[in-house]
Length: 247
Image (cartoon, rainbow, N blue to C red; front, side, top):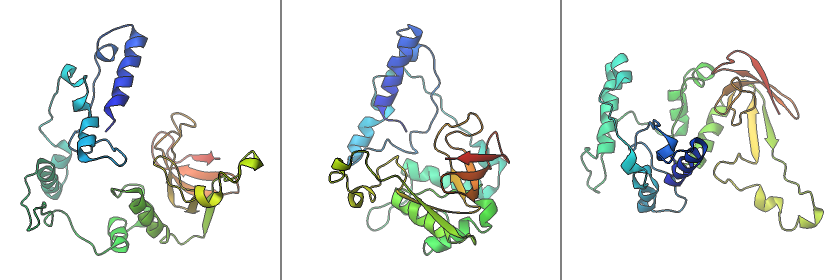
């Protein structure tokens, strides 16, 4: 969910563009579920996260809410999906029973595994095909990296690693920007210093390079790994099946 300040900025910008003092310069539609995720506030408290959500913005009193009442996805699929969706609603509504420690008892939701290795083989039993159709949600980036490493090992091809540029244009500044300090940094929204890939592994494009074929969120499968460019096959979206070169 966006921070309320981001929506406030969009509101001001649209009012200027439309020369209209109404919220967002006119009628707009906002979609989402406020129970799914709060804005992430680095080193913030739960109160900080609540204060950053849209409901705490001055825009909220101008918003007319409409609630969806039927989970169409669960109806169209198996009964197990419907049951799982109902249990997830119990989690967000705080309806689950509490354990001896006063925490919500989630032991009846889903299936439990012993570790990352078993989780990878359970979610992706047919690795090459299902990696394009399934995903694993985790609360932290470090957990994401652990699962990525685990899954990458299952590809039979040889691994190749790429590193980011870690030199400075002014040699006199090198003492202030040492590689030992910069390379381990993992700020939110930035790629890792070291990226390891294998032929056939899926990757996600994070830039709008060639709309609508190659944009932010496009998934591809690595086809060839050269020194300064990747050749990959688009596996989702407009250009599915086509080759693309990523510098």
